[in-house]
Length: 159
Image 1: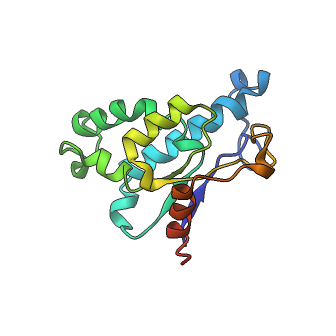
Image 2: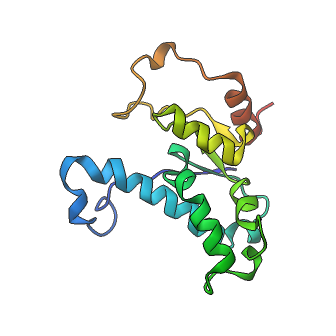
């Protein structure tokens, strides 16, 4: 069974969030992306993918800011003293990143193109944020690209 990671606003079931995010819905706009990026980093740095090689995890909204920070995260994996030994080899961080799945709900074609270049299109799924504030207005008539639908079937083991 795959695991889907989606953030939630701070304070729902935990501590209140950063007061700087209280205005302008920044808790949803920025904090969600930060939580998704943090989830990707913790899964890789924390060795979760190494300990559970058959675990399939999909991170919403293209993994937050992962596409923009992957170079920094990979460099830290190779150079920072606190990084696990398993991530020190060139490409080790990127290898693990390529094992994750991401939905394509990024609201920007350039962001999606960057993510696709990083992880390929075999790990992307159609994402809509159904009923969310940022869902496409024409969702009822929208059909996902066949590749993304096929990827979802593969992830969910639907034949």
